[in-house]
Amino acid sequence: MSDSSVFRSAVPLEWHVNGLKLAGLSWGDPSGRPLLALHGWLDNAASFSQLAPLLTDFYVVAVDLTGHGQSARRSADASYQIWDDLPEILGILKALGWNTFDLVGHSRGAIIATLLASAYPERVRHLVLLDAVTPQPVAEGAFPLQMRKALEDKPRLHNRTNRVFACLEEAVASRTRNGLSESAAKQLVERNLHACSGGMTWTTDPRLQGASAVKLTEAQIRAVLEALDMPTLLMRAGDTAHQASEYIESVQRSIDNLVVYTIKGGHHFHMESGVGEVAQHMEHFLSETNKTESAL
Image (cartoon, rainbow, N blue to C red):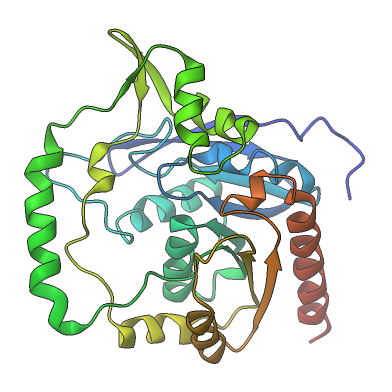
């Protein structure tokens, strides 16, 4: 591990991919092991501001996914399906010069990470999933109703404006109502606000709250999971039922190299008091599996 703390402060990053401005944060020495971090729904790259500095062997790059944080919103005709961010993520990886890398995702970011790893298993050395793996499957027969929901949401959300807050404290309070601590909420909120008439409002695209037109079936999800041939670590929140136990059991049957831990805390346990335990599990998992690979 590096003894220097000079690289442990967040450094802002920016890319332009497919006509979109994308923002991010990095921690660590750029010569360290590359680790890409993907945040959850309505969060941003600051989601990793507690965890990343503890991963001292790694160069951590966290991305504001499109429509979040300081990254651009998608065009009016575009969508926010879980796979829509993959081309931009691949563009960022190209800009970074990362052919192979470790990958961590939280919540929706974990789902996107799973899709990326299944499509490019030869590039993802290790996969770390925080409180999510895949979306819940839907029956094939549900497609017409799902498509209708998306079609009705599109015009409803197209011109919606986000809530205006009089001050930062008011915006922070809106996030703590869901169980997030004030300190964690403040880190996320500060990166997700911009000034507007009457105060400040979210940068987040309201269309992210719309229904997806297409959802994966059980067979498609099984195919995604079975494509994950890299060592995979899943950490679950102990205080929530975000992923049902029977679903986790089905995931374990589909992924050969899966390790599962339960972390005390809520859905954002990687931003709370349990972050040290999360970092320990990650560093042990990544170092031990790396030793095994090196010995082969």
